[in-house]
Length: 131
Length: 66
Image (cartoon, rainbow over all chains, first blue to last red):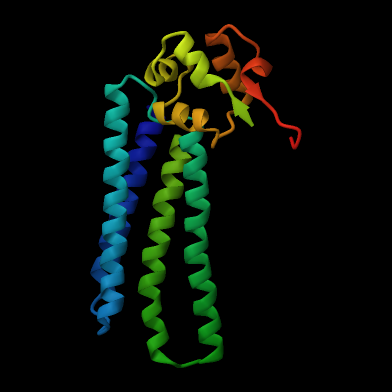
């Protein structure tokens, strides 16, 4: 029961984060960056759908929807995904220190938030699945 | 590390899904185990050995490099 509540809380937080991200990101004026943002959202939705379908199939087969292999895979994915926003954050800090006052650097924040949401999603799901 | 899971499963007339259900894992995990691309935990190795009524060493074969 506690795990289910936690899962819904994480899902609500992720959806809220995506909502805030999409509402505040705004047009960047760069088609490439906007395509990247849409791809990140599509990947998130696709990943959630994939995991959902996988769980329903496992339920139909009367097998557990999480086991040691899937947890290991999820842990690896989570740690890889965590590197993405961290690397972007360091890059952002570095660029700001090298070019203080350069306005276009701030646009990188949108990508940073998007990548961070991906990492949080995977980490949250992994944390919930962990026994 | 090699293993005899596929051979023993055939001998006991068990499908991958049936074995997965007996040891409490997903079918995909049995697929990866049989391919030798995943090394199981001691708990899972023990569960598999119990299903086939054998010891872990009889099912999972460690090479010299291990």
